[in-house]
Amino acid sequence: MTTTFPSPAALLEAAGTDLGASAWLLVDQERIDRFADATDDHQWIHVDPERAAAGPFGATIAHGYLSLSLLAPLMFDLLHVEACALVVNAGSDRVRFVSPVRAGSRVRARGTLVGAERIPTGVRARTAVTLEVEGGEKPALVAETLTVFVPA
Image (cartoon, rainbow, N blue to C red):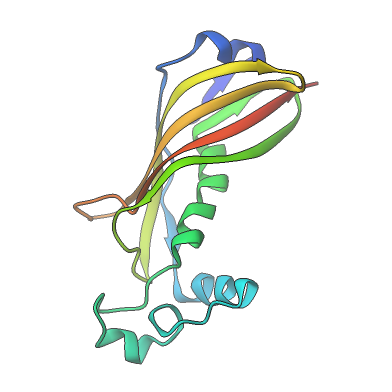
């Protein structure tokens, strides 16, 4: 379920808000292969299912940066701010890759709004996010994301 705020300014008083969890997203081999093509990272642990089956993870795995990039669409499932002209990804802090995302796994984001501050272009929000792997004991990654909400 998406948490909605009426404006960027409403984020300023919302520190500590639990944003819940996003919907699940499938990370299949096709997605991994497309990311490999886009980034020119064709390491066998990502793109060679036969060789990877005998490797340390038992299957191909998503690139760490693919897993991190999935936070962008998943965050839209967690947080919606109305009355925005623009929403900009401003980066991530304290990113840690905790466990691999095997091809065929489903992931989702779980987040908490840590805080927000006014900046010249609008409001910059900081969100603590965990990327969970369905059935996994550990998350795929943990990070703090920074998002700028520019008022309409």
